Image 1 (cartoon, rainbow, N blue to C red):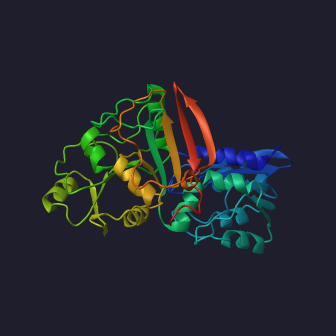
Image 2 (cartoon, rainbow, N blue to C red; image 1 turned 135 degrees about the vertical axis):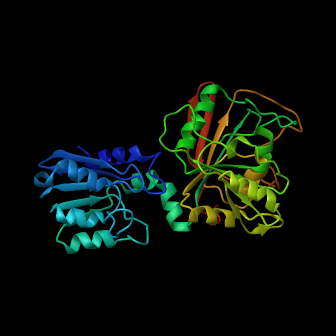
Image 3 (cartoon, rainbow, N blue to C red; image 1 turned 180 degrees about the vertical axis):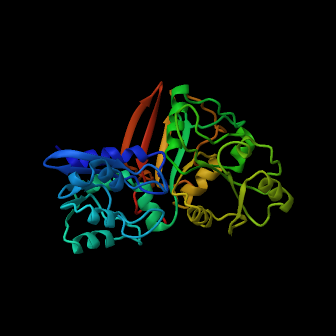
Length: 365
């Protein structure tokens, strides 16, 4: 039996609830029998090791082998150190899939266990552990949210008509699937044009969730109306703006409970890098970027996208003036196009969703 595989499976239980913390799973094994299982489900809640050891009980934990997907913490944060709990439980061996990149841990948990006489093995299923927590790892390393660019388009690559009409390109099944994506990120973001055109809610519907992502608007001085859906629904919306925004308008938003953040400018527009840094300070570790075309193009041209999730409908729109998801400068050669890695296809209703990672060498963090 592959106990680390079971621990990785348990870790996924926190996929929609534990951010900005990592997903972690733990299995306690005594005499080749699983006596405890645990997962980290919520920030501030018990860590996977604690849950698993408490389920096992003191007698079964003593001399046991523990399989955990991430290095046990060694510092006091929202909860006590897990390394200390493992030591007090007198476990014999700890198998760890990967080290924790958090500078507050970063090998210290492993060292503390070894100093206490516990045998430690690191690296089993490391690639799977890294893939599981790619958002957290990016957030820790660059102090910026992991950005997923999402859009829906026709077979000929159009996301709206020349008038901006786009509802609905994809099937109901695909639209429901998007809500699953929303449930797995810290925040959902759109630009001012999408706010004005579509008046979105940006919350999770159609799927069960105990947590809503934070709605984010990349604002514009042209927006002066505060009566949009997103400012009345969801959890504590964030409005990013520059110093050119009208103070009275910002005050209206603040009175509605909107967190307004003035960020640096770049050629008169919001500096996206500065905005991402500000969002990371607020423990936003991942963002689903839902458009429109101007915002998607800005993120793409500045190499700030980590992952693409594109829904393709079996429709052909045509039209020279129909809107494309990403515009801007055109490269001279196909060889200059961005080629995604780890690409996956999935049929959803009558549509397909294509997902892929942006190569690290293409990104600019």
